[in-house]
Length: 315
Image (cartoon, rainbow, N blue to C red):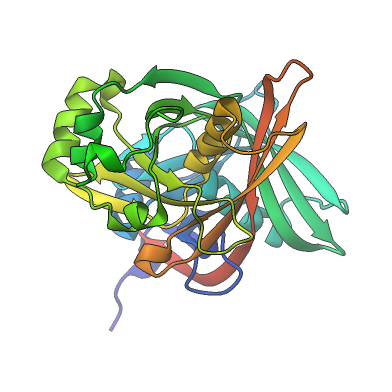
């Protein structure tokens, strides 16, 4: 019996866990390292089939972009301009497969995504990758959300549990926009539960219908961490929780430094913990560099990656 696989289009993929140091932690990702023969429609269908927060597809860079690789990042229902953990996981796979010539201790490559061309730093020793760092766009600080009652409703919290005052909910983007929502304690972070109807109402009232909420506090589980966070989004009318969010972590680091909610130096290092509430503990390293005038020069987000499995998709 034959199933005719030889006559079908094949696409190899690699599964990794990002922001983890052992299997089954961090944020899972599917990487298609050689996707130049796939159409955008096929990429979207594969992302839907993988049913992960993101799936990436590596294709040749646009001529004249100056990039080494172009990475297309898809969530199950659309392509997005940038995301942190997909960048880190993708370049771990490319380095592991020998597509990048590593120079100890750090190799810089350029990635083209819809948000632009961004540097990626690969740290290694004797050809073994230790961590990947994505250099994000300079932060853009957008709307401060005045309707804090609607934010609280979307998280099934009361307004009194939000920190407010010196830390109001605010749009921040370092490539992908998030609403940073500081709350008073870790118990409040743990208690938060997405309300899909309130999320939908919130989305209608905010710019570009973006309502991805990053709930955070300065009350971590690990005393070596700085923050304890959760990322909640409305996807296909359902609330989805992300185990580890690199894009939001960059936004968070920029927000903390801008608001001076933590001690700030020329290079401020932050460890953000996430994913504990859903059984996928993650540690995300954030580095915010500031200029002499206090303005933010750059935001870096990094972490380790675990290779989980390999496979082939048949289209």
